[in-house]
Length: 314
Image (cartoon, rainbow, N blue to C red):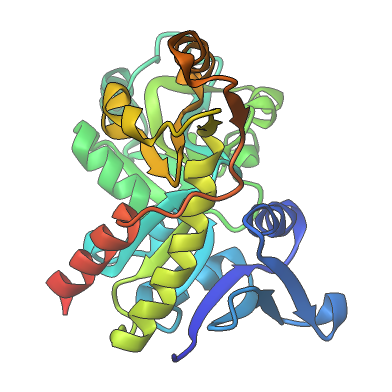
């Protein structure tokens, strides 16, 4: 089996959270060359070659096909993509690295709460100053797409090299588009988010490149990895019921969400207590409830959808 390349964040909180995610799935990351090394081994998945890169390098590598897999923010993927749906496939939202991409204006603009208000102000601003309002941002493509969708025309984008949130106060821009997690930095700089100004609710994503070289061997490698990750995800939401008698014959009463494993039943956690009580009363007791660590299913929907996407872009 050939190897596939997986890039993860090289430092900071995202790196720590990524390591914790894989560890929870029984896959420990071991950095080659110590903390200063830029490659790693994913113990339990020898077919995966791990590289430690910056968030923007990961996004660009996924989009140009030099990486098979990567963990980075959705905001960077969408910003750098020429044709997002044909270049990258979002396999799984990871539940960390949350950030909103927002349009923010000075709090002193008391009559500006929406993009429509901003368009009206933009016309007045241009009539008064002879130029369009300046929008400072590092997200030029995303801003352009969002404003086009919203019908905003009276603006021009300024590439922000420094602290974007300081641009209005310094006089280099009238408003901004930036990433925020809590909004505290925006408030500290006397800025407010427009009511309809949230452009993207981003988080860290495990993503696959549709531009990479996917042959049969590399597809088998990603399937094996995704089988492990999905087995852990599914197990978190399920309980195992084991009775004094075989419970396998009772699977129908729990619908398509249930699985029979030997003489035991695997059902959604929220059904476990009531199911155990009912089965015990019906003579199947004693019934024990357990928590599976992994639940490998016959069909992996995440892999199936990805492989179909690869075949469409081949």
